[in-house]
Length: 373
Image (tube, rainbow, N blue to C red):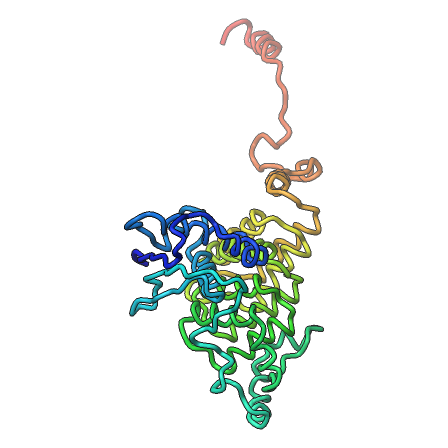
C-alpha cells in the first residue's frame, strides 16, 4: 500500500480530542481503534503529513489488517471517510465533523439490501443446498445445525451494527461482493456458533492469510474451533501457532510436498500429541527413524515407534538416548553360558599332549651308548 492523503474537515483547528468523541464514541470502541483515531488527529494537524497503512502499523506494532479494521470501524460511524485507489487500496482518509449522537453510516455495499434478501420461497429452494454445505464435523457434534435465514431474520440482522461491520470486513478481506451463501454462513458462525465479533474477524484474517478465501473453508475452520472450545482470539492464536509448528515440522521431516495432511494422518498426530502427550522433538525423532528405515513417510511405521515408546514410559529425548544405549549393549553382550558351550577350535593343541623329561632321556641315552653318541 502506498501513501495516503489525509485531510481534516473538523474546523476546531486543534488536535485536542472533542468531548463528544470521549463521551459518545470512545466508551464502546476497541482500545486499538481509539489509538489509531487519535493518531489520525495528531497527523492531520501537521501540513503535508506522510501517512500510510504500513507506517501506522509500525507505529503501534499492529498488523496492517488491524489498521484497516480500525479505519473501517470509524468510517461506519461517520467519523472518517475513506477513498480507494483503482487497486481497491485505501488512498485517502478524511476526518469528519463529530455528531453528538453516534449513527452508523450505511456501508457502500450493504449485504442486506433488497437485492440480497431472499424471499421465503427462494429460501426454501436454497435450503437444501446450504444444508449440504455444512461439513461433516458439524453433523457429528452437538453444535447447532446450519440453516438458511429467512427474510425476516435478515431484516433483523440489518439493524445489528456488528454484523454490518462484519460483512464489510469480510468483503474487504475476501476481495469480492458477498454472495447469499457467504452471508448465510457468516451469520451461522455469528448467530449459530455464537462466535464473538473479534473471533470472526480473526477467523477471516487467519484463513485469508493462509490463501483460503472459500467460505466453505472458513466455515470448516470455524466448526473445528467450536468443537475445540476455542471462544476467544487468544485461544485461536495459540491453537494456530501450535497447529502451524506441529504440522509444518512433521510435514518437513517426512518430506511431504504439494499436499496437505489427510484425516488419517492428522488422527495419528492427534494421538501422539494429545493421547501420548509427546513433545514435537520426540515425534520428529520417530519421523526421522521412519525415513531411515523405510525411505518413505509412513505414519503407520512412526506410530509403531511412538506406541512402543509410550508403553516404555518415554518422556524426553534423553530417555530415548538411554534406550538406544541399552539396545546397543544388549546387542553386543554374549552370555557366559554361550561362551562355555562354544565349540572348541580344531587344531593340534586340542589333542592330549605327552610330557617328556629330556634330562632323564639324555642320561639314559648316554648310559646305553657308553657315554658317547
